[in-house]
Length: 163
Image 1: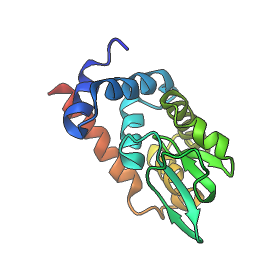
Image 2: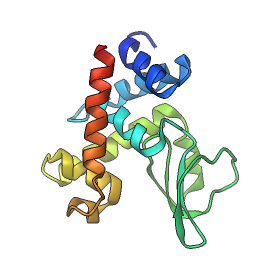
Image 3: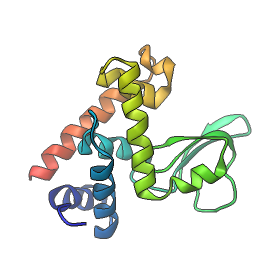
Image 4: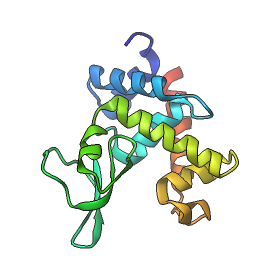
């Protein structure tokens, strides 16, 4: 995981992540980046979505959306589920949800989804982020400032990595 330096250092300082965990997130983001999806963008989405917790699961419990860590291998709630550090779509598949705990798979799935949203929104990054965060309702602007929160985190990550 060479070359993770300033970005991993920033994640360690800002979020208190262990060095190995910070390096794993940066390395996974670097592998998944491309096609209009920057490393810093992926790290910012992971910050907003899960605070870099690979075992984070958004699921339905008693008809309500619940988010947070779920360390067990026993299925969490019901679907549709969003899992892993970037809360990528797992649908009703608990197996996919558990697979997205692998940081590399989680970042790749999240990056693929962002690239697809970019394609659907004609390259409009803010709309693509809203789509990722809230689906088609978000693309139309109903996503409680999700895009602005992510883009603010991108700026903080870039600034922190330069410090």
